[in-house]
Length: 288
Image: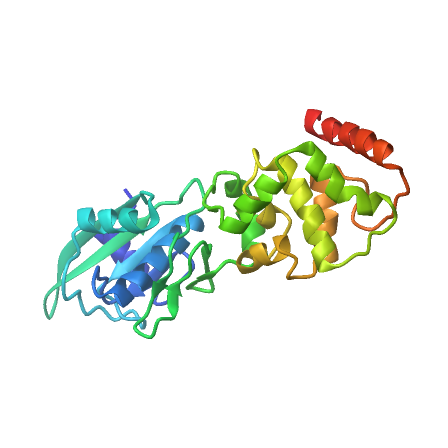
């Protein structure tokens, strides 16, 4: 049992917040600002191995008690309505006596087996996001913040189960344009004729080429994280709006068993050789 009054006192006696627990005076389902901040913490704990919100306690560990209790069923339903997923948690309240009767609580969020994100922005009163859509939140330095590359590397085993990236119109148009192998090889001819020049746009073309053959195994979101892209810039790389780092190229070559000079070298084959050679090469990749 992760929640108990003994556990509550144990965490309060620590006297400081930690990546595994956070002191909260109150949690609320309304107004939206309050719930958005609560959801950010819940997502961060679920993505980071689990943890506690210690309720009725100020940041300095002073116990003041909660003003109002939250119904666990209502909390679970509101989370599911927003993110489309159930998040496992335990929420318990306890009456204690410190000069008078006070109600305190523990909200334990279980570790999720897959990464959890919100599919929509949750904004404050000024229209600025408190929770950003399709953004991974993580616990670091006793705060719930956007995951950085180190966090993502530690979470990489969850990425294959994420499945949260939803195709935009541009993605669907791209898939339609690549639906035949002929269209794919025709677009690649410039590379093999020696007319290839490295740029963000040409990198995006080759990145989308890889994605075309692996879209049954990875979403764009998953592939972007595996290649080390910044989470909020994955679309930019696929759309040719951001220049890749050497790390990204090396990861792609290693992960997809590409020629070491795939992104740079010029080839001088005729169209028939291009089609046959590249087709055989891609087939070998897929078979292996």
